Length: 257
Image (tube, rainbow, N blue to C red; front, side, top):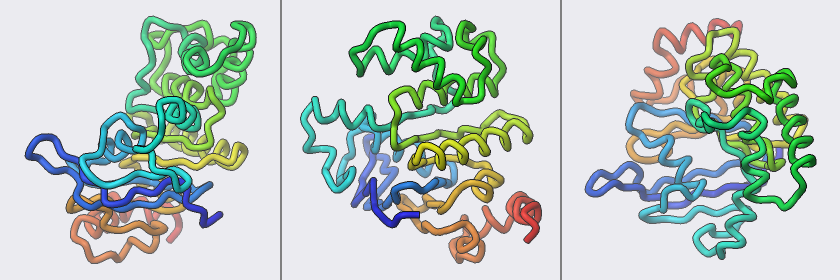
């Protein structure tokens, strides 16, 4: 795995009125890695994701992509950046009035000037990459199972051939078999497409199975970031309880350690 830093967060401050979520938060994302982000309720995992994506303006600090400050980009430069990453939002966030095919075509319509037949061809390919049958393209989100909706949302996230993929609780609500299959798909796609993946998750199995490193949010900052096995004996109380509590011990035992 390359040590190149593709995303760098420096001194991030995030606040909602008087409520401060992040204070002087630093985080580096290495090119080509799968980085898991964990933390207790209210630690601002999704807020961090939204700050990187430009959906929330930082109240302080800087976010850099390949060394360039995102705050200094022009609107046209920002559109180019937005096309570099794909996002699977929590619960999929598919457009309920559009078919799967139309959902996957939506980013293409917004960012690329091409014919409808070509967009349909690309969307069909992405639907296949996500592990869905071609017939899913004509179906609406309400006609899909939870696992299929996740895969449809993943296909949409891949529509613009991003090099960075953001996932917000991708296995939430899936049964263990479905979650494991989705983890395997993400790992396979990251390797095959050379993706950098930033994944918010509470799923300990996902952390063990596919994450190269795990960043832990606590006390308004990134308290620790390291391969998961280096975090097992971390002295911070929340980190210790998370990895050494009953669920953490069960997940570790399942890895044969």
